Length: 160
Image 1 (cartoon, rainbow, N blue to C red):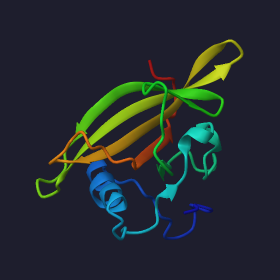
Image 2 (cartoon, rainbow, N blue to C red):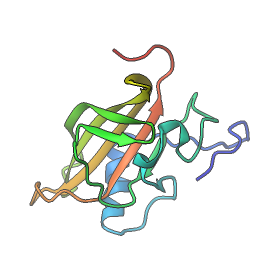
Image 3 (cartoon, helix red, strand yellow):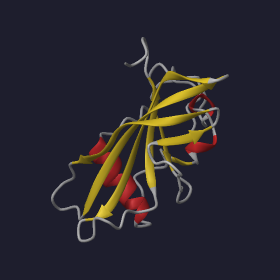
Image 4 (cartoon, rainbow, N blue to C red):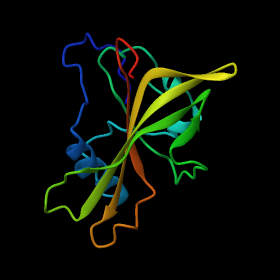
């Protein structure tokens, strides 16, 4: 979905809660069920710097980017994932996301910060990424290959 001109009347701002993102989008995607609408692109977020993701830098003052991964990614180091000219480093790993009792899935959320490679060192950026993965409650170790990502650029000072 492209967001060409946010000044248009009826501009669409997609900013679901964790529960809606997982329960209405990720679970339905994993089960190949119909989705509420096509607000989330399929894209390998580890192929580019966050500023080069589809959607560009046009609307970063209010927009968060959402992507499904395009396949089962295998990482040498889960906590540090190479992407573009840098890497996503883990900030918080496998936080539980509360889903309604009726949902037969559990969800784990991990949060990452993007570090850009600058010559011989890495520099922390304002980019944050949240990764959501699900598994059936009946077999929590059977985590789905599909994940959904929320990526945004924080305004102001770098995080500590």
